[in-house]
Image (cartoon, rainbow, N blue to C red; front, side, top):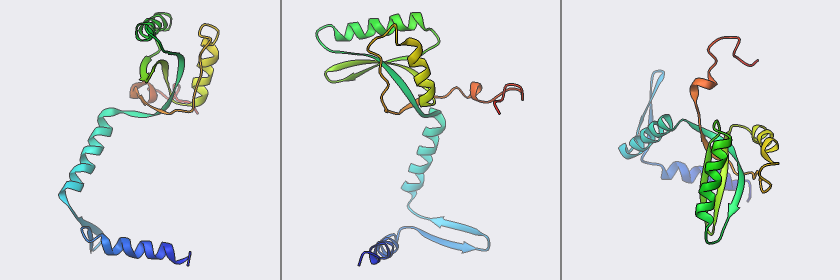
Length: 151
């Protein structure tokens, strides 16, 4: 009985998907379907092209709660940015805490190296396995010359 479940699922999928038909014309395949689906896919592609992000990591330097948590979080973020002007910092409200997170690291190893660099100044620093969409600076990712490329 268990072997027949995938076959039944495939058969139901083929029977229920009557809004999408493919016709073979020589070497080209023409797909006709609902216009709304095509528009949604085009919007998704346009959104991804504008956003220019990829999965990445951040380091949490503080999680604050209490009466002055918001103002303390903003003050901590501002102090961090003064000490590390080349880094990015974010304040995230995760009720009831204000969390201060720093960095847009492409790999967990990059985040861990930076964590080791700042852990003495920020004793509550942690790195969780949360993956965030980080902004890409495409100019720094594409080497200008062969000498700049990493092999």
